[in-house]
Amino acid sequence: MAKNNATKQPKFRKDYRPSEFLIERITLEFDLFETHSEVKSRLQISRNPLAPIVSHNLRLDGEELALLSIAIDGRELNVDDYRVDDDSLLVLNVPDKFELTT
Image 1 (cartoon, helix red, strand yellow):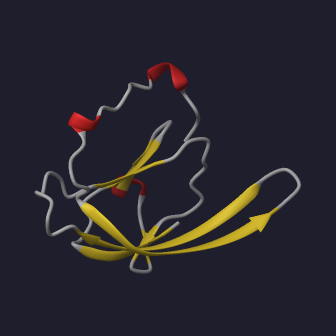
Image 2: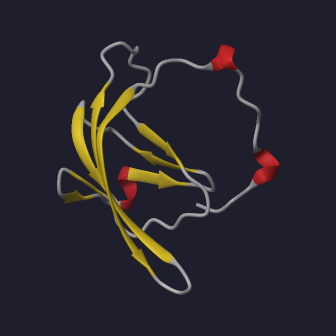
Image 3: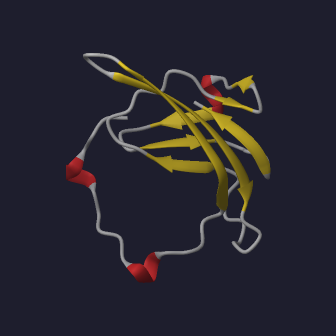
């Protein structure tokens, strides 16, 4: 996910809605090198019962990131199971409760 400031649009408070998913726990492991860093993350995620179901996909924002691996509940995802663009990761058809590992 590369940085692209040219397409950024302002976000207004009136446009916010409750998040469809809640991140209940985050575990991060950092490997620091002279030229780069690698971060392994484990997120415990569940659907927000107070939010309307708009999509069965999970979108996570991020800039200047390279996805090295991705799994749900220990199962490595195929490239058809997710999308990566300049500023986000979209995981398709996620269950209501799961562990996401990247």
